[in-house]
Image (cartoon, rainbow, N blue to C red; front, side):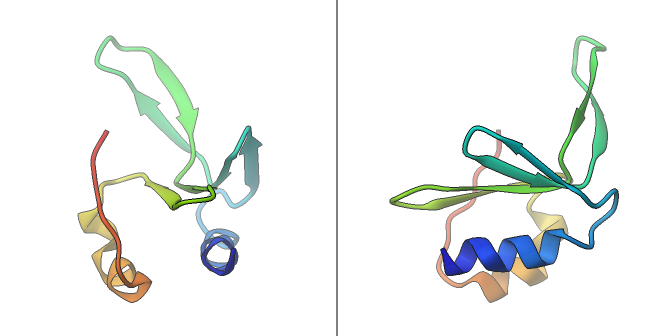
Length: 81
């Protein structure tokens, strides 16, 4: 829960600031994305989903964009989806 509060603190002042909540997903900021098929959707700039075993972060712009912040996070894994 401590990590979730830290992510929340970083996200509250981001671009298009504002909290979006859906299910177990909490997101901050807004960004317009275009799928490969041309459809567009609004998505969060950064988000997280606190779960019992792990906390998952969702980062727009790729992991490399947030390398300096991820170093401060401590032990973690990354993936792309």
